[in-house]
Image (tube, rainbow, N blue to C red; front, side, top):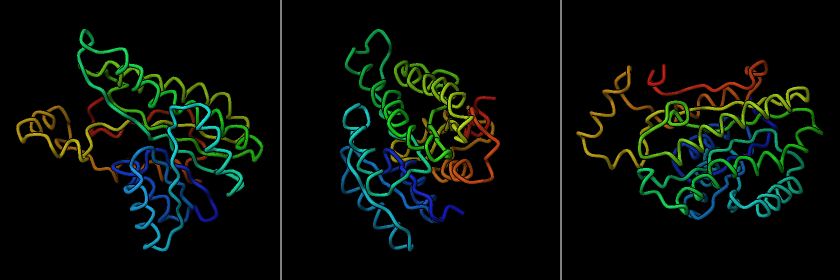
Length: 246
């Protein structure tokens, strides 16, 4: 399905990013597994991909940094000559009520979650325009659709990612480049696994389907958006949230 394609997934060392990297690789793509601080995790993802017969490479970059992102993209393009699929998944949280939130925590979340996506799109768009094809998939959040108390920075970053998605989709559509956003709801990850049973029950009561989703649920949609079956879809925000946001 994706044989011959080169995919770059940011924040791919664990959780949703890992699931996305594995799904793309298992369907034929060569995957650049980006990480910032978790080298061991990223290399473990690469090893898992290679054990399945796929091709991958772990590359460090803090996507929040404009110059580092530019150098990262140049290195990838020099080696692989193209990037067909960009998945902007890197994200951080620094939760707090707005009256207690520090400027540093606000900036850190916006810099990685929103500016990081801008940096990657900004530096890769010229190459995609030249090849007149590409799939850009931004991982937003249901928090960016609905808002979430205690997450004003995170919700703002993910809502901004939706605006970025729609604007870039309009700019790049004439060049054969599709840009879409995926908005996960409550997903079973390391973070949610550490929650108490009562907290999980309260969370599930907010979900019409009555359960959390899996990282693979997100990866399956990204796989669809990365392939040819989604060629007539662009500028969309698709919620994978068990019905939370309907």
